Amino acid sequence: MKTPFQSAPSGALAGALLSAALLSGSCASVKPNQLGATAPTQVEVRDFGRTSDGRTAHAYVLRNSAGVEAVLTDFGATLVALRVPDRNGVLADVVLGFDDVAGYEGKDNQYFGCTAGRVANRIAGGKFSLDGRVHQLATNNAPNHLHGGDKGFGQKLWTTELARDEARVHFSYASPSGEEGYPGLVLASVVYSLTEGNELVLEYSAVTDAATPVNLTHHSYFNLAGAGSPTVLDHVLQVNATRTTPTDETLIPTGELASVAGTPLDFRAPTRVGDRVAELDATAAIGYDHNYAVRDAALVSDLATVLGSGPVAVLSDPASGRVLELYSDQPGLQFYCGNFLFAQRGKGGAMYPHRSGCCLETQGFPNAVNQPSFPNTVLRPGETYRQLTVHRFLVD
Ligand code: GAL
Image (cartoon, rainbow, N blue to C red; front, side, top):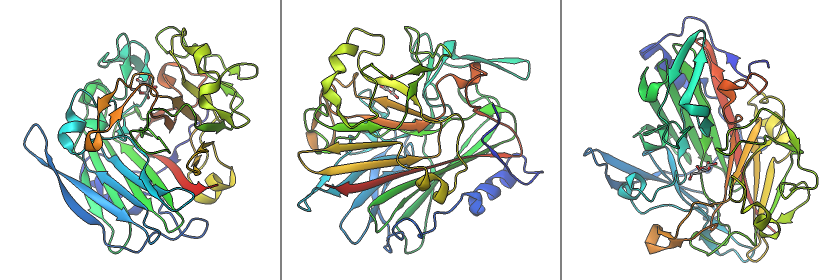
């Protein structure tokens, strides 16, 4: 399939040049025309503790005038907290997470809120061949590679730039050639912006000096009743996709596309998450953990295109009235409903039991690097990987 990547000016090679290209605004900045304007505010910076190797992590607080608050950390370019109103205006933090960086480095962290990469989701056997060379990655989710390996992008300390007087944070990370077995130096960036329209906008970009797969995603676990509420099974989900990518027993897609019709994966009409989940208990996914084929290829990462194509998914909590509309340019959406959560302790001592959060991960298809019929995820020198994902919060 045709590459979704847009060409960057030629001659952009490794090192400072690439870095400059990324940081000097090759990232398509969101204009406030169809979204609420980016909230005019000073970003508050807080200490977020020390990493195990002695570096200081920070938390960055974005606020808008409705009182909505997004807290991010440079560790993993992670969304730590997101406070949005219910139908009575009462704010609740709707994402699972930890109080400090030690929590995010700890064994109880299951990619909470992070930027997963260099390749999010699974690569079969941790192996792929590119331009005649075989690359072996960590098989950290045996027998496969998951979310970038032993220490993927979600476990790295990113470099931060703050926008002046705007609710926006720019994180960048230089992933050296050979890191986790991947070829090529990759310079990745993600920009989080909070708008006056209660939208959290994520703009990703990446460039490389050698061909490599790149597939980034945002891994927040949402619970619209408030993180720590016991379940998301009463949430209602709509996914605007007619097909999924069926998998083998290790969650690697077989390469087929299957219709959702007549299966518990059919969310074309808004449906309670818990209604049919038990039918999946005895499957390899042990619940919802499926990639929806939203479209055949990524869209151009342009705000009008992405918003104009309509929401990929809508998640709502009828009790509180909180609604999340998700827009994205990506071909895939992994809907994962917290099957592996095990009542670990998170922010403020809250407990996160089985299925008490669900992830809506906009991304390329799993194992695309080994599946030529899937939309391309290989980034080459001179191209720029882009992704635009918008989380819009409403009430009903
Ligand atoms: C999801 C993935 C799940 C599981 C989870 C982390 O993105 O689809 O299978 O690995 O991350 O626990």
